[in-house]
Amino acid sequence: MATETRLRNPRYYNDKLVNVTTSHPLPLFVEPRTVRQALSDVRWKEAMCAEYQALMQNGTWELVPRNGRVPMSCKWVFRVKRKADGIVDRFKARFVAKGFLQEPGRNYFETFSLVVKPVTIQIILTIALSLGWNLRQLDIKTLSLVAPT
Figure 1: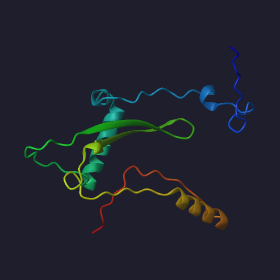
Figure 2: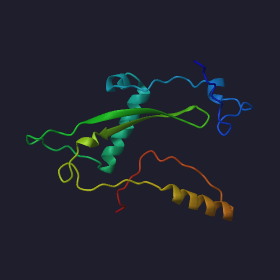
Figure 3: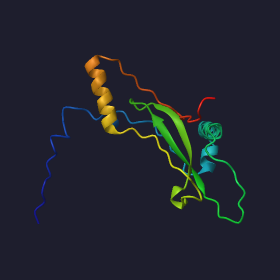
Figure 4: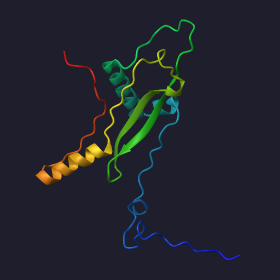
């Protein structure tokens, strides 16, 4: 049985370039899979406290009596955020509800998600380029949607 040698696609492969990820391996930070693992490290504990404070400050959720109903469960999700050069930027913890268990009118009454469409970004970049504007990027940890009083 003859074996075929598959040629690399020149569109995605260039032997003149060096793959930075293999030349300079990133430091290994294992993202915890359980809360117990996360609580053993100060950096993850601080990330969890920051997330909890943001949830409380924004009034994202509130504790309610069970009244015989099954409560919706939640979980912690942990990620190491890196800069473009691979250096660790921060440790990010998110407390998320298991949304697949939600029922409209019982667990939630409205939905809202800030999402920017790619077309909007393309238009802004085109305008900025044509007018010679300087562009900057910023990272918002937590967006506060509370209206000023």
